[in-house]
Length: 169
Image (tube, rainbow, N blue to C red; front, top):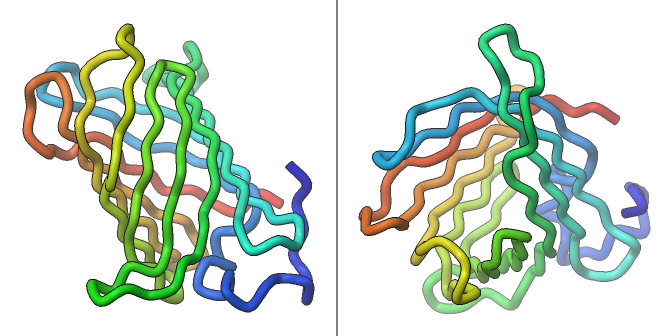
């Protein structure tokens, strides 16, 4: 993905412009079906002049000393601003995962905050059961902070991930 931040940014991307860049940091992953653990993360969010953002996130498990143990999740996708609807939706996030599922989120972007809920989840017959997600991203004191709740493995929408990332570009 080519990183590019300049005056060529389409106007409709203005509420998402703060996401553009390379972000690195750490967070916590947990769920009723698993033990809580620390993870590292790198996100690259870029644009090529067209009215969408490219998104790539990679995570890895960290040991108690903060060293990488093994890869965890990878997601790639696109942020798409859309005309605002009656319920306030003005952005979509389309994500694909190598573990066999694709998510389509819809939500509301405003300067320094985005909140999204899954509008659809498609799974491969071989993927783990996952039915819904809720994500919030915020630009707080120059950091990217985000949280995700997930409904999966027979559990209702429950806290799953949170992280704080610093700009690295």
